[in-house]
Image (cartoon, rainbow, N blue to C red; front, side, top):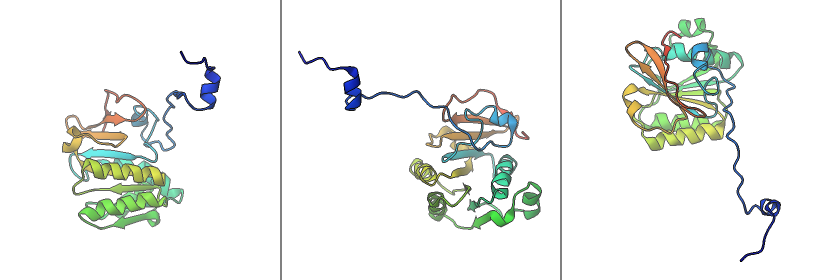
Length: 203
């Protein structure tokens, strides 16, 4: 039979692992939509993490969803990078939403270069947010973006087809745009259980 050792001694010598209580998620970046913030565990976008937005089609509401955040970031002097956007942003609409266009960079790249460019922007730590519209992306590539967002402490958004909703994803937050009725549903959120209730598209 072994010798009796005090628990304090085991902890001091790190021979016993002590679990920690799960910390509550911190949301320093609310979405700008009170109804959506109320559904998310941290009350907003996942920081330093990959936020995945699943759409019926490009231009079907994602800008209205993201403009409050982009306006806030750019007005604070943060750079926002759009990688592989499906169209050139309509400047008057972005300005009307409060986005400072001087702080927005547009990278027109295609294929695997989109993911590479997004990853480099995220890792650089010089951006407030990076939005990427990948042509094709798999679990491995999404995981790389998640790691890059974490290492660069940057908000990352991947906007892709809603048909990917059935596939697993390493993104800590996933939002799905539902069609009938048109609304946003939280599929996955780090720090809590995805709520059953959805919020209207108009928010």
